[in-house]
Image 1 (tube, rainbow, N blue to C red):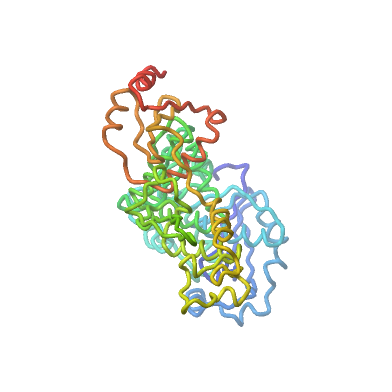
Image 2 (image 1 turned 135 degrees about the vertical axis):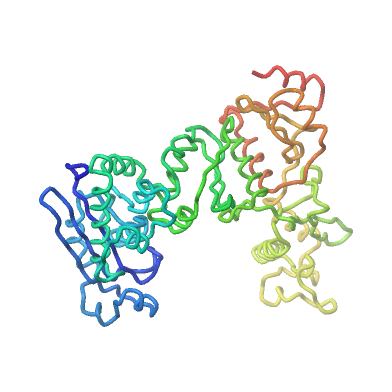
Length: 474
């Protein structure tokens, strides 16, 4: 038997659905293999929730069957002692393990065994086999199961597959494969441990791909390998991470000189590749901002649309919003909080010269009917919007932010590109200023406030002399 010092628990569960954080366990079956031979343990579990009809039809477990059975909390200690110090073996182990771990967590028990997936074992031992689900294993290896989709019978099926592997390859080969897989037990089925070990422990951006190289997720880290492994470990308990792990088929990465370059590259690649699970950094074509319009009486605010925005050059911009709806909601919130007149701000239409609706409900100080002077109202509008003011570009022209061997070029909050020498700097400066990007604005604005802390050096590029200085950077 492989790893003679280890005790193996072949585990299968039946559940009310596929979501570990919402659905519940209805049955647990365990076949334990140790030096004394095999032993069995199984329980029906009251899930304390409804079992959908399609699940009843699949498993044969009805609400009546579990109504008088113990809850998970009532069997938790006995189950923990049954699994304690054993290698947890299951088919698509991520599913079974995530459910049991989540249930243990609800009753305050920490459960983190070594986990072995027999799907991965089958893939390694039978690489030319097209499918590796349990029904395929039954057909290919001539296995027998008394009642498919009942926990203990399916656990016995895994044990029979294990014995078949020993018969075909011998205990030494199986032991080697088990040792390999236990070293990568949290990795998705389709990802080889060797690929993950190739990922450098350096700053950069990583890309997860689904089938047909469809972009799935893009992220950044100062330690690429640790971050990627962290995704897959988190997938054991986090639904989003689990969904990513189940779909990922390949991983790529791009190294950067540091964290700042990784932030910029991540933002650009997400907008370029539009991965399925990245939402926050998607490009917005409806970017807008408020602008204060001075007048002889009450000042006005108007919305500046995406095509007319020039942040950094326009000194009179407030907000920067992804959509017009966001901009309106923000201004309305500010007006109500500060008792500003929404009619004067253009947020409300009123009939004639009467008071606005806000005045009637005590959300306006009465600027609309002269109860508050235009001067005071104007001052309060400017004060209320001050926190939203878009920073002006603090340089005469473009700058280079040096990070290690890279030069990141920016002009008026826009990213021009990353250069490695003076020739590339000149080429990027000659390409003109690209479209403003709100995420890049947030990244560079935050970074400029702590360049010394981050070990970054800034060089202004408004003169040939400064460009010569750039050419001499290490």
